Image 1 (cartoon, rainbow, N blue to C red):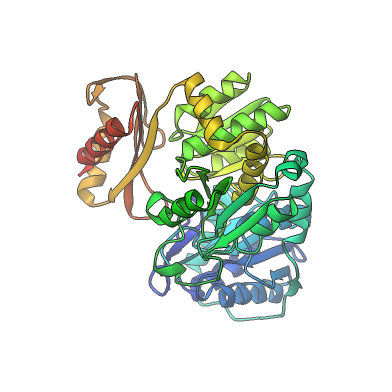
Image 2: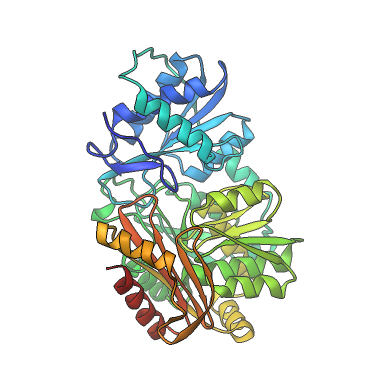
Length: 454
């Protein structure tokens, strides 16, 4: 039997080696035992190979155990699955997806009643039950079909967006779906809001064109070039299950995750009544400075969206964002949502071009560069990380360390940015995050950070 382990954002791995249908079936049985008979569960899946068949198996297992299982009839972005859980008052959700990982990966996410990722206590209980169980006796029953799963979500999204500026300018937007589940949904939402949208990589390719459906600079060169060549107002990309996003301005420049978040936070704070923003430890300081300029309180939390989702659900934050392209607004969702981010970027661009807004923000609050790299989590690297946590340095590359935090990896607050080391919860790597005054200084800081744990 495959060993089930829930990382930062679900259980995933190489299909047939680290993740398989047997393990997914055992998770479905375990989830049914955690819920009351008749509880409602939404089951969804992305565009990867085998995701539909595994979703159908899990839904049939849940239905056979007396659960009101509702299976989406088409590939569905995770944010829409989460919205269905919340709007249909389901007790849980199950999404078969490996998000932004390589094509050979598959996995699943368990959703809480609010549509966000399930709490750690439930995930640990599911893993314990599933790992202890022998192959369960199959009692399969046909689940109920959920047709047009995006309709409820799009209606709710449209109610939140101010379309007056969009209607006047009718911006042209280029959307890179990266062959993922956002195709046909994110572009539909932008069109219904009044944009003229063109789509690239919109066909559902289980191999994602031969690379990971991850909206990072190496994978978005084509989008950036096409936006610049085609004179679009902006470009947007989403990952495999459309919970992450990336923006390209009208000049063809790919914004960093920190810059994209700063643009959204600045726009929403200027147009809505907000009080609080929550961001991750690895998010750049431009977001924090932009939020504080609008009088918002800012708190930081650990890596992964779960701590941010908890803050949103507890009304401790109105907006939340992280360093890997995650953004949420509690008016619609508690978990990251690339479709929502794209809609707010459209609203923002109709009021002020994205490159002009970003230039203004850097004039007012200073510039900086953020990034992340990774190195294999060898035994030697893990020991080096443990030594770093036990004795944090007083300086990093000449920059003085102002604060040291070792509760979630090792985060050093520096006089001109930060350096942060953390073992990934989803992949066998150690990630190094950093912020520095310039791209050149960032490259040096990231290289030095890798060297410390190699």
